[in-house]
Amino acid sequence: MRAGALGMSSGLFYPTARVAANSEVIALARVAARYGGIYTSHIRDEHDGVLDALTEACDAGEAAGLPVVLSHHKCAGPANWGRSEQTLALIAERQRRHPIGLDAYPYVAGSTILDPTYVDGVIRILITWSKSHPDMAGRDLSDIAAAWGVDQRTAAERLLPAGAVYFQMSEIDVRRILAYPHTMIGSDGLPHDTHPHPRLWGAFTRVLGHYCRDEQLFHLAEAVRRMTMLSADTFGLKHRGRIAAGCAADLVAFDAAGVRDAATFGEPKRPSIGICHVWVNGRTALEHGRSTGVRSGIVLHRDRERYGNNSESDGVAAAGIIAP
Image 1 (cartoon, helix red, strand yellow):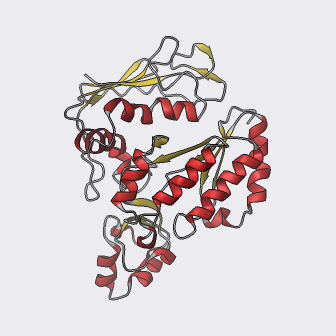
Image 2 (image 1 turned 180 degrees about the vertical axis):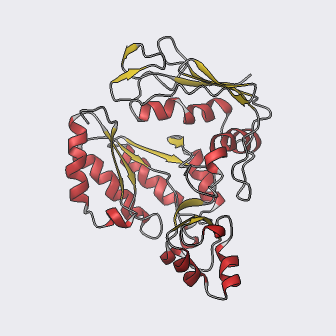
Image 3 (image 1 turned 90 degrees about the vertical axis):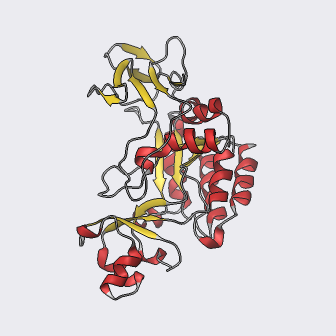
């Protein structure tokens, strides 16, 4: 925290952290709280135990005295489809007494490591990488199992270590969570997967095109707020996330009538349509839809920052999106 970290995060869903009790999380979060940090949580259970896991994360932040951000909120597994009414009600109740933020990505599928215990033979599972069988990346687990003449659980065990896309959410829940006014948009993209989830290339343009313009889930200014100002404010980046004097010139110009995601689960690396220009720290990164090769991004530190031109600046800087 003294080096400038924004806070601490936990991944209690994963085996390496699953054994940690909430008392351990609280003890560490109290250190971050002393420096004005935040606590982000990949909660312990997004399936049947989602309400208990959300309560645990909120309890940790409240006990430690720092804001909580719930990472990529969802209700996973067919048995839990529709439960976003309950989870958002719980979040809203906790927000009345403590700062709670959350983010989501605009897809009915998530992506993480392949875990055979989550192979139920019901939901579709797409393999994103496999160290033992790298040629299986991009294929459905059901097809691999059929080709090998085994059940899907056995096929998953043979593929380990591996990654996967799980088609585990309901569109109704995705829409409801995206529409919740406190939900930030995040990609949760995994750039090193051989066959990644399309959210890495299309999350933000999918919101702008599909959910905002086509489905009218919210208006354009609100979609932009969810990607810029809301995120900056939630993470304490006081001079980013908005177009204003003294803020970093992080800007995107896009065609509001034509912007859309092009990446699919079959072709996940297709660039989005309708992004015209991008400026990062005032330098052009994308011009007329083509990369300039200029990389002026920087590490953001809590309460101190250098802009891309290495000029000194107090505080942390700003972002915005321009729609012609």
